[in-house]
Length: 293
Ligand code: KIV
Image (cartoon, rainbow, N blue to C red; front, side, top):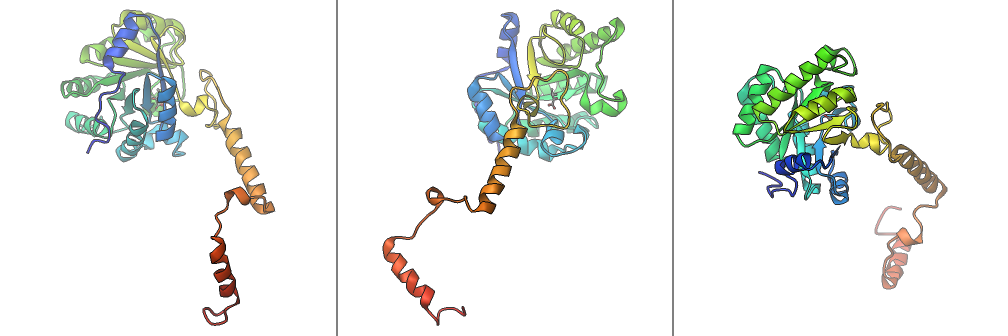
């Protein structure tokens, strides 16, 4: 059963319109209802329920451990919080690689969970077929090229992609194929600014950059990076706007102090019995028969 079937204010048409009018598209990841609500209220265009949640929320060492079940739960939570922003859900590792039928079925489950579009990585012939069949089935698709985290083991580490003219040409060709297959946008991750600029200029669909410089049609960052909550490492391309790690640690230390010193709870945080009941309670305290003490 769908948790969120209302068409959001931001649709695929908004992406085309913003690209054509040279207005930047803003995207952030989110994984829970309240964060999605605050981003939505702040005016973000789209929220990605990224499989980065595997690392920043679930503590896995890569995104490849994330399952469909987990993506469905987090997608539903975000969809409940985002009233106007488009919600895009990541297809997790191995959920779209075995058969086209299974891939489309899994994409459909994420739409049923509340997403308005799905994102998948790569542009092999098989993936292009998946994109085509999803779009034919009514599922909008965002592609993801450049550094593709689900291919971490094949790429051999967190490395900038497209660092030569030939490699830039390869990403451009992949982008054009994704566009032809029906994708309405492409995330370009860790690509040199010049390469991303060229690719963006050759496409009718929007590019959304993460570590891809200033000239993509939009930008996306991982929420926990901009909020300073994920502290294992800070990617060069991420800008930090807050230090939630310190806020959380300091709040927890103060709470521990307050509890152990008896300062918490205080009078304003306590419920009391009505005065009449206090008399009866006193009697109970002195009663020898109603309990063993
Ligand atoms: O999973 C994710 O958060 C992503 C972004 C890095 C684009 O795919």
